[in-house]
Image (tube, rainbow, N blue to C red; front, side, top):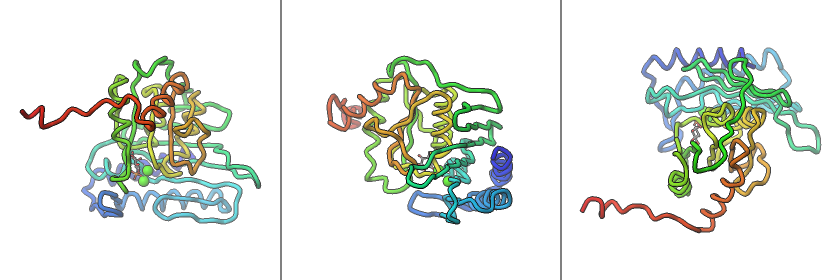
Length: 271
Ligand code: IPD
Ligand code: CA
Ligand code: CA
C-alpha cells in the first residue's frame, strides 16, 4: 500500500508543477486531470496485486467484485489547494474487511503527503507510523490549551452549520486550522500536531485511512454525540482521547444553542 501511495504521490507532484485546467463538479467542487490519473494508477496497482478486491474511489465510484475486502481511495485529497498551487494535499488509501453480518473493520491505511515526503501508515492492532517511526497522539489535557482543525465542504455549502462550531471552538481553544485536506488533518491528530479535528459530511474515501491511523496512534474517533464512528458516518470527531469528553460537551452546547458567543458586527467595527 505504501509503495502505491508513494507512486501516486510522485505522479501528483509532476502535475503540481504544471498549470492544470480546473474543471467543476459543482459550483466550487473542483477536479483536475491529476485526480483522475492518480486514481487510474492506484486502481491498476491494486488490480494487479489483489484482482478480486472491491475498490471505491472518489472519481470512478465502486467496482464491486463481491469481495470481503474493500479499498477506499481518495487519489487526491485537497484538490482545491492543489489546483491553486497551495502545497497541502495527499493520497489516501484505506482497506476494510467485511465479514458477513458484521460491520466492516478498517484493517490498514496509508496517507502520503508528497510535498513533505511524509507517509502515515497503520495496521489494525499494530500502531501507527510516520515514515516508519511509531507515532502517538498528543497529551494536551484541555480544549483551552489545544490546537484543533476542521474543514468546510465544497458542496451544499449553505446547508453546513460548521461556521458556528468554528467560531465557538476558536474562542475556547488556541485556534482552529482549516488546511483543506481531511485525510491529512486526521494524520496530524495522530502524530500530535493537532489535538483534535472535526468535520461534517466527509465521505468514506476521506476518512477510511486517517481514522484508523488516528485510532492506532491512541486517538479516539466518534460521531458528534459520542457514538461510534462508522465508515458512512456523516460526522467525524477525532481527538487525542483526553479532551474528547470536553469536545463532545462543546458540540452538545452548540447544537442546543447554549452559550453561543455573538459575532462581532462589521458595521459597528466600520463606524
Ligand atoms: C476535501 C478535503 C477538504 C474537506 C472537504 C473534502 P477533496 O476533499 O478533504 O479538506 O474540507 O470536505 O471534500 O475534494 O479535496 O478530495
Ligand atoms: Ca477528499
Ligand atoms: Ca479527492
